[in-house]
Amino acid sequence: MARKTVLIDTSLCTGCKACSVACKAWNELPAEKTQLLTSYQTQSAFTTKTWTYMTFVEKYEDQKMNWLMRKAQCFHCADPACMKACSSNAITKTESGYVVIDQEKCIGCGYCVENCPFGVPKVDLIKKKSYKCTGCIDRVENNLLPACVHTCQPGALSFGERDAMLAQAKKRLVEVQKTHPKAQLYGENEMGGMTYLYLLLDSPEIYDLPVKPTVPLSLTLWKDVIRPVGTVAVGGAAAAVVLGVFANLFRGNYGNSDNKEGGRD
Amino acid sequence: MALKMETRNQMPKRIIEDKVLRFSAGERLSHWVHAISFFVLLFTGLGVLSTSFQPAMAIFGGIQVAQLIHRIAAVFFVVVVGLMFFVGNPRYHWRWLKFVFSFKKSDWQHVCAFPKEFFGGHGNYPEQEKYNGGEKINSLITIFGTVFITLSGVVMWFSSSFPPALVRWAYPVHDLSMFIMTAAAIGHIYLGLLHPDSRAAMSGMINGYVSTKFARAHHREWYERLKKEQSMNEQKNV
Ligand code: HEM
Ligand code: SF4
Ligand code: SF4
Image (cartoon, rainbow over the protein chains, first blue to last red):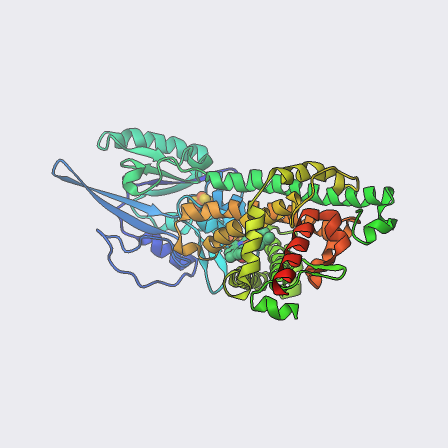
């Protein structure tokens, strides 16, 4: 399946939260007790049972309030840090661009939790399994729209082939910039290009998003340098020992009576 | 008798007939607790590190149990040896630290000649004190490795109490320490068990004593010092 994309056009979002309800319904996730945190926002982080939620920012400029809303979920990165970090090959990326956790393989080590630049995956401490948005891969592969896209009334969410969605996003951006000059796309190239592409009304910082999200340097160092070099070093030590035993055999050192008693005087 | 004096933290008579006391009971306890817990940690850690080791965790009853054992072994690895420094057998433990942190020219000379010895040849180097240059390096790797692997391990264990930026760095630190310590341990085991010339040292870690012949051949400066100290003590006590 070719690369898919969900475009989140925040200029059309009304903050109704139907997407988060649709997500709970399709994925059979129980509701959690929440409370009002700021503006209309009731959640500030993902949980094992909340894979998408709405953020609200009230930004005042020139006596005017700009109400910035964003549906937060896993971005399904093309270069996913979570997948690189996973200890158990439990995270895979599909050709269509979805990053999916296989709970059968997951051991709950939490490496994905710590390495995702957006704090998306969460480990259930009882089940010892990691959970996050699946992108409704089970629906998409059966030619259904993702549950959130399917439910969105004002058309803030749309789903399609990546090229088509990118073209649509760019067209909308020109339009939106007329009223919101700081509007920009987020996810076209970030993390290799994200399956969940945003049209934001302001800079990412305002939304509490990293401006230049990257695979952590420590993760690259860990998996691409220390692992291979360390493996070779341990292999080298073992090889030296085998060589040492043979060298001593060859020199006849094991039969040497001096050695048995602890050395030459 | 010697044991009783050790537990009272006194210096027992070191040279008895053809044997020299090399390690106190406390030092031996620390060594073996550290060694055994190291291998338990390594084995259970590898189950997390790689999916090719993961099936082997079935011997514990699965990866979840292995992860738990990793944490339990970590406590022994750190706490038992730590306590030996403060209540168990402080005198000998701190003296070991003092020895291995004083790295002298003669130690370098031993290290340079050492590759030859490792492969069964004979290198030339000055007479050595209680620990030769190679042993000091092995000790230093153990000390620093333990500190780094413990600090990073604690951050990984209680990751939700630390900022992600710190936890992310704990992983490479934990792995790097593991690789260095494992490589050192492989060489260390070879020298203790398989190397014809140096394996005579093994008894020192079992019953505490090595032969005077071994002491003279490998650690003459140490042996001569003990002999001098012992004869001075005997004169004093007369
Ligand atoms: C001394 C205190 C130590 C603590 C507190 C500690 C703790 C941890 C923790 C929490 C993990 C994360 C994996 C999991 O959730 O089970 C881990 C992984 C690991 N530990 Fe330790 N550990 C310690 C010492 C050691 C030692 C001495 C070794 C081996 C020589 C070791 C080898 C490993 C390895 C290989 C991993 C897997 C790392 C990876 O996935 O790349 N650990 N340790
Ligand atoms: S947003 Fe985080 S969890 Fe989602 S694919 Fe990217 S790195 Fe993985
Ligand atoms: S918690 Fe699960 S999915 Fe996340 S890195 Fe560990 S094994 Fe992989």
